[in-house]
Image (cartoon, rainbow, N blue to C red; front, side):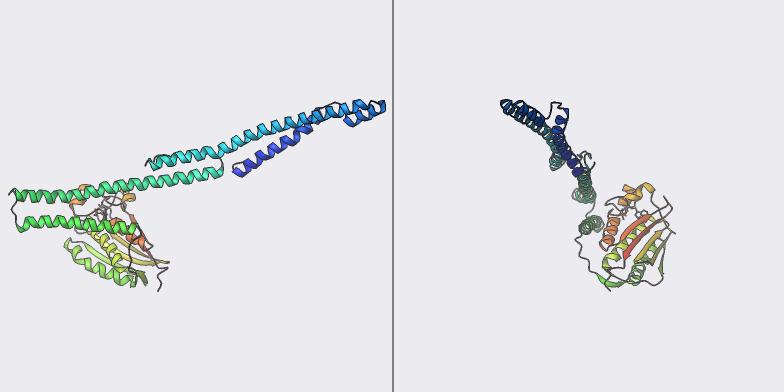
Length: 365
Ligand code: ADP
């Protein structure tokens, strides 16, 4: 009885039943003798006049019965009509009211998920859609305020330094100008990173896919980072496990993904630590694991680590020069290649492992 068509069919069948059963019930309840028997008796008695009287009486009775059936059927029909239309119009009214509130940017609204299966399904889809709208609206607001916040810091420093120079507090020399230049570099990186994430998330990245030997690409990238790791006395190892395939990827972008992970590794691993990059083919994917013995990540921070501007230690990491977009770029670029990016850490000071997967299928080689 939860499907709309079952309910409606049952109701129409009920009306039909009532309309058919009513005359039968009347006939059964009516204990007056059969009209034919009466006429036979009247003919036998020679009461010809009474016959036509009796026939007229019978016709009137029939008309009365018909009117009664029509009225009862009509009332029943109207009641069923009201019920049927209420079943459909009430949820439609709810949907219309909710839509109006959404148009007014109120995303907290939800419609009741009740009624027939079909209406429940529509209400559920509607509520899911509103939830997604609410999430993306919250993300949009958060992004706007994060961007404003991130821009404010370097702008403050630039402005403060220039004002100090004008007031003669700071000398106008190469060193001071270098500080200002450094901050403009922070701003430039931030804007470029933001553009990259926005384009990747909107699927607007122009990926320059070329057949690329993944082993060679990773080997070169890790080598190029050896000196930065050595500077911090971090041991950087590469393990190329088994035979590795050629992938149809944008080598520049995948190199950037790896560099972001390597620079994080170096940033969050103390002196004397180890970073290990392992690459392996598992079924139809290539798995790239970047593991360090550094600061680790608390379990409650893990789900948000790839979010834009998410930092586990806000002040410390900003000071260290990160834009807070490195991992968002890692995720967006990997997903643009049809892959995935995940993170695992056993907890603070227990190191971190990032795992990237890149599909081999569709490599078009
Ligand atoms: P940031 O520019 O701050 O490094 P990311 O997006 O690259 O931004 O990283 C987001 C946050 O994830 C960092 O602020 C840091 O808290 C955490 N994180 C990233 N990589 C590591 C790592 N290898 N070890 C520990 N924490 C990390």
